[in-house]
Amino acid sequence: MEANSNVSPAVVDKIREIVVKAAERLMNRWTAIAVERFMRPSGGGPPVPGKLTIRTGRLANSLLGRAESKDSVQLSEKALVYTRTVTVPYAARHEFGLGPDAGVTQPVTRAMRGHFLWMYKETGDEMYKRFAFPKAGVLRIISPARPYAAPAEARLMEEAQKILDQTISMGVARG
Image (cartoon, rainbow, N blue to C red):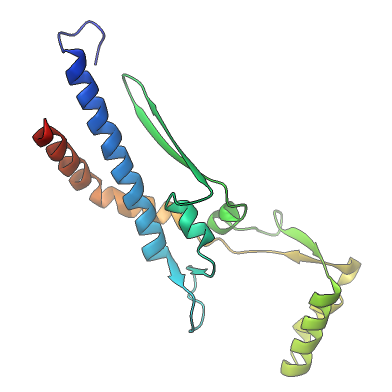
């Protein structure tokens, strides 16, 4: 709204309230899509390619705004930016992956070496022997991308207009 318009401040405040509520509803739906469609609960069964397995729920709760996240709303006359900052340290690694250039190095600890040797003994797979005794004593960890945010955003766009229309109707009906 322009500052010179003939719209009362109460109407402008009501419009802002409705717009912020719509943004909150969109954010909540986006995170629900991310968790429901792109993550899967642990509890048996093999991993599903491209999906994150929920083990502790830490990342899912952060996405849902329950913990380790911070929401902020910036509203101007031309735009509204609703941001949820997720502070779980491994969130970006899962979304974007760690390729050969971005991989991290992990020193092989005594416990890791014991586990790898046990796996080698159980399976006979030479890979575990190489893991137990890597060159330079460190493993280079490369992680594939398992995006949850970007695909959820694409799915949200299919539902966004309906959510906006419902929010505006409810806001106008309340007066």
